[in-house]
Length: 108
Image 1 (cartoon, rainbow, N blue to C red):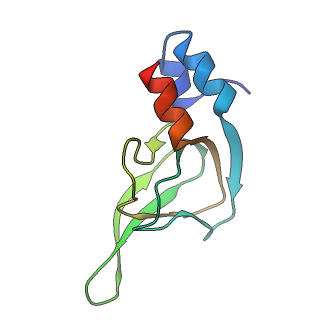
Image 2 (cartoon, helix red, strand yellow):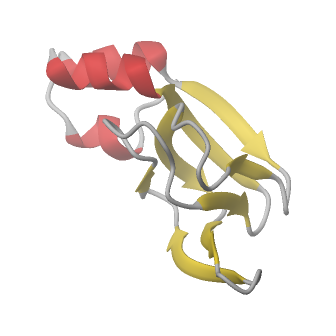
């Protein structure tokens, strides 16, 4: 897999360590990747498309709190829970890392 996003910005061997744990994931428009309040199991870089980051409001509505665009990093390394939901605004291609493996690579 060609280096993109965060991997392209890191020196070797950190970039190589991340490349080994990266997995390609494609989301259809409207498909969610993570849900607000759930375990923070992964993070990654958006290669193509767009993700909307949302939080629920007290009255049950959904508030868009951010957008993830190509090249942006997403997720919450070193956090046990997500503070938002991430849903594909359009078909999107992502490089995802298991959070624990990403944290180990960063620490190394």
